Amino acid sequence: MTFFRTTAMITVAAMPTVLIAEVSKLSLTEMPLNQTPIEGVSSAIMSGAMDAEGAFGANAIMKACSIFPPHSHPNARMSLVVEDTMYLGVGTSIDPDAEQVFEAGTVVLTPEGVPHRMAARDGDVQMLEIRTGPTTTDWTNE
Image (tube, rainbow, N blue to C red; front, side, top):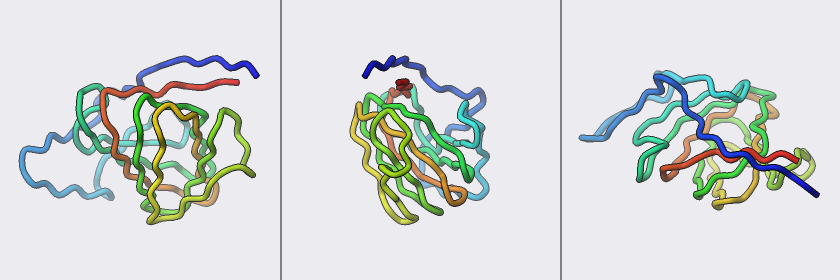
């Protein structure tokens, strides 16, 4: 099997960032989301920044029937599925029969460098992600 890997930093102009200087309350339902380069996937950085050292948090929504294609990251991710069911597959191909099911209220731990993909097969999936930066999304193609 041969595959090619390209690396790209996903940046969205005017993505809101909240720096924590005091205790803050964020409303996920009122937080403006930005469309990502992946159709049906939008997100917002809640605190910190993708291109800076340290932890940061993101709110992400995958619309029903959307698929986030195979990719990896140079650091581990922790994601809490807030709404609906997220399907996660490990590897570079999209095989629905090999996906793990993560229902609302479960936490997904994705190790650094592991190719994976996500799908919203049933309805709109909302996730909260905690990551460390700086980070990239490394696209994996077969």
